[in-house]
Amino acid sequence: MGGYARRKYAEDPEAARALHRERTERWRERNPEGYKAHARNSNLKRLYGITADDFDRMLAEQGGGCAICGSTDPQGRNFHVDHCHDSTVIRGILCHPCNVGVGNFADDPDRLEAAAAYLRRC
Image: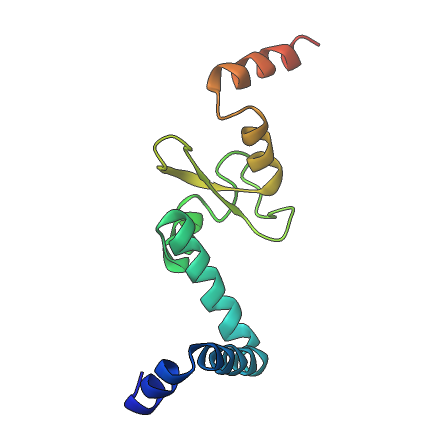
């Protein structure tokens, strides 16, 4: 931030924040793809500590599809970062149905195995 901007912010912080929001909104409108990429990278960094490049590399390393079913269709807007909620270790990239399935079983392998055994009964 330059000297002029720093002085204006000190004089009227609320007006400076409003000006910043306005400039940001104009930039977003002129650069929708750039904003989308920035937001994706920012969210991945904040939530999982990885970059969009890391995500893309992980997806490619598991064959370009879901780590569980192999589908290359996310069956939703995007693929999901699957991680252990206790250790925060990233396990892989999942399609929407597999991510929801794992989540509904509370990340418990015993429950998932019991469900698989149940399904195999018929």
